[in-house]
Amino acid sequence: MKKIGLFHLILMLVLMISTTAPAANPFAIKLGVVTKPGAAQNIMAEKFKKRVEARSDGAYTVKIFHSASIGNETEILQQIQMGTIHMGVITGGPFDTFDPIVRVINYPFLFKDHDQADRILDGPLGDEILKSLETSGFKGLCFSENGFRNLTNSKRAVTGPDQVKGLKIRVMSSALHKAIWQALGANPTPMPWPIYTELEQGVIDGQENPLWVMEVYKFYEIQKFMTLTRHVYSPHINVASLNWFNGLPAADQTLITEAAVEAARFQRKDNREKNAARLALVREKGMQVADDPDVDAFRKRVAGLKDLDLYQAPRVQDLLIRMLEAVK
Ligand code: EAX
Image (cartoon, rainbow, N blue to C red):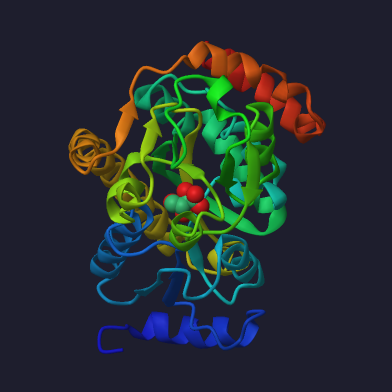
């Protein structure tokens, strides 16, 4: 505690007495991710840690719990709600059981490219989504990225939805992602991260994730075919426990938010810069890549999703309509 000033020390005692999770030191931030060092989430978390610790002059420390050591994404979110964990860098998928508004940003084929995703997620529509999370006990800080998701499998080359038929595809624990792959004719199985063993043992034929996953998790060892479907742009939502965040001094809230926004900007750029090399790597490792699939055919199959119950809550439907308008 060498650098903690008197102000933070007193505040820490006050917060520790008044918070719902009295054992948690509000200045020793616990942050959960399900992925391992080198992963997109971890790059975000590590950058955030550096900035917060440096800017607060040591008043705050950030401990990153990685590789699902404190649970899968659903469990991390539950702990953030309870306030036993302060923060998380979480994929859009598992969020939809906590707040269906998150389905709007995971809508298939929504964003054309990175620039459009940044413009919208960093603008008023993105803010609305972050704000909405407060209803379920989360402070939404900003979006970093997982990236555009691509299909991989061990069975056959896929260039259009016809070849997807019957493939056992692992999906995130998300009603929307399950519905997407059902509409595409696959046999989707929701399961939490990580999934290497299930792929290796053939419990599932395939999965879908951005390019960095191929490299960091070495999926090229166990998946022969990749299709650049880019079917969902997958943001990471940087969230904090709302109670904890609201109990912090305003200046510290600003410091934390700014550190997250800057780290996210760094991480998105870093992730994108590495994609060409990742694609080259998987090819070199022997994966067969379909880089020009029939995206229109995929898109047609999922066109009916917006009419499903998943999007029927009025505020969700309203935002989806405005979002679809904004990306035109
Ligand atoms: O970030 O569960 C998933 O498919 C996520 O995209 C994974 O944690 C990699």
